[in-house]
Image (cartoon, helix red, strand yellow):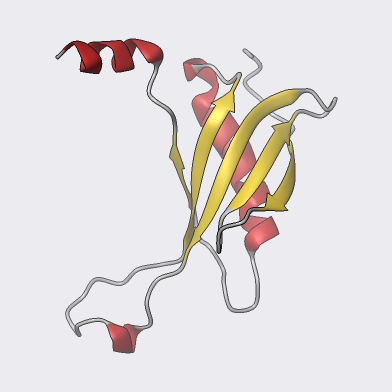
Length: 116
């Protein structure tokens, strides 16, 4: 996919695990773009951490399991997907501020690691 502007839609489903969701990302025509897993990351209450602990904000961890997004399109893909996910997961008691994306290692990296 070499289109630098994405018009995405996301269909979410719950999984069998607490607080983990699956998503199918499609373009405006319903064509497959990516398969994702979303994990809402909820920080501990301030009274549960040491007084000098840094401030943590809620966010979404997004695991991109599979997709047709190229390295040239990563920023556009993430920039288009983030507002959709942030809006879908926002609740009165949970307002994620950003998405943290993770991608699978390319097969070439896997082959290098197994040779060592």
